[in-house]
Length: 179
Image 1 (cartoon, rainbow, N blue to C red):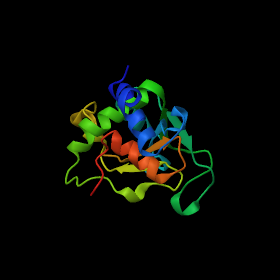
Image 2: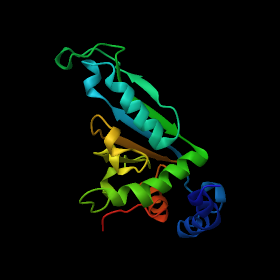
Image 3: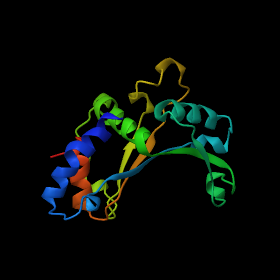
Image 4: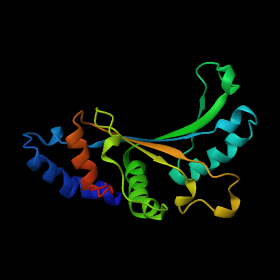
């Protein structure tokens, strides 16, 4: 079992239940999924650029990414409907907890000039989004083999619609928020 999953079920869940005065253990907020997305804008010009992003995302998450297509044509961006412009991975269960563990304790401390995550990145429905500028903060990526430094979006989806409960859940997992 993943370390963070074990911590959640043994300690954090009881703390959150007591803090929010919830009657039932099933009312306690929990992580549902983590979605990791890489947008590849250069794929409009050269379709082979998407392959390196897919390889990087597969190394980082341990799961095969799904290609994402453009939903509509935009002439200003030279974008046609159906053109592959990115990739994404949806992590659940053990892989989700393992990825979150690596993100918190290995990847985020390696970010240059890191001062903490903003509390303003909640969407109002209990979900939290993080934007990362470089994929090289993950130790799985070999710096010599990358063709271009790419950013990624990480969206952490929780079971609650309350921002305060979601914040306390993520703070309980030691996500480094700014003071």
